[in-house]
Amino acid sequence: MSCNATVSAAVHRVPTIHSGTHRPGESAAMSALVIRFKRHLFWLLAALAILRPAGAGASEQVIDVPLAQGASIAYLLTQQDGSQPHWILVMLPGSKGNLELSQQPDGAIRLREKNNFLIRARHLFVDAQFATAIVDAPSDQPGGYSDAFRASPRSAQDLAQVAIDLHSRFPRARLVLVGTSRGTISTAYAGRALPDVWDAVVHTSTLSSPARGQATPLIGFDYGAIHARQLFVHHADDGCFLCSYEAVRRIAESSQYALITVHGGDVRGEPCEALSHHGFYGRDEAVVAAIKAWISGQPWQDDVG
Image (tube, rainbow, N blue to C red; front, side):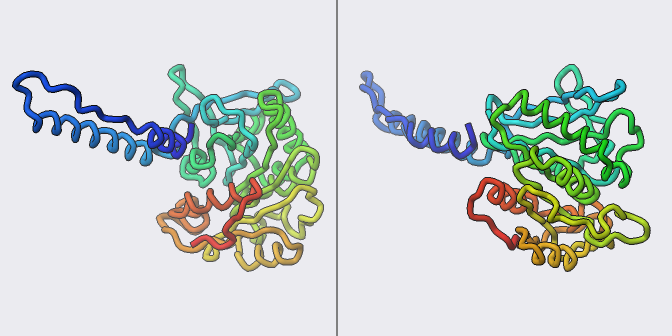
């Protein structure tokens, strides 16, 4: 049950507080005090339900998927307890994507790149309708994803195996491919290579301006070759030299792709790092809400500030 549903159910179950029958010597004032205490306790519990952290009631597990030649690829599945999600967001974080995912005997999750937008915001995405699957680098790529490997047919086939595993667990779920920063090389190439897998493809903080020998697979990339519906999400003041907002805006406008423009937030890191406008730092909740609304076909904000 979601936080809002918990509160709604509680409000509709407002208890009738009975004054009871006074025993000899019991004052009416004491009885009234008890009634007020119970009433205040009820509303305190309702308030705590409202303030319940996003993602509360979510469960997580690290799942290993076998690949060819003895390799494997792991992903972190985060879902609301007992849910059958309608959408599963298959997420590719940026950088080299080498997360070193593991799960301890007590269920605790260990992973690198915790500041990455998709990783730190995963619980905000999760509810009764949405789950996330954050994908690690394959075991035979110990250095993580190079730009060339992200663009390779092999990498797309690895994601196809992840998709097969997810569909075995959630046969009715629709899969949405989501990447951020260097992960948008993966969303571009795997989005194009696997047209029958994705319900939608979401590119956040896209490497729209390849330069200095970096992000070269995206030079001249034809986003029109991706059959799934597409969304671009970008901060208007992204200071990363590889990620020009104006270049993303031209890509979106040229083919009428959906674009969410983000404003404001905070900067506590370098321009191409997660704790900056590049990673939507300080705007997590609003950005996640807009993305989820677009995916689910609800009215969505194209300008988040």
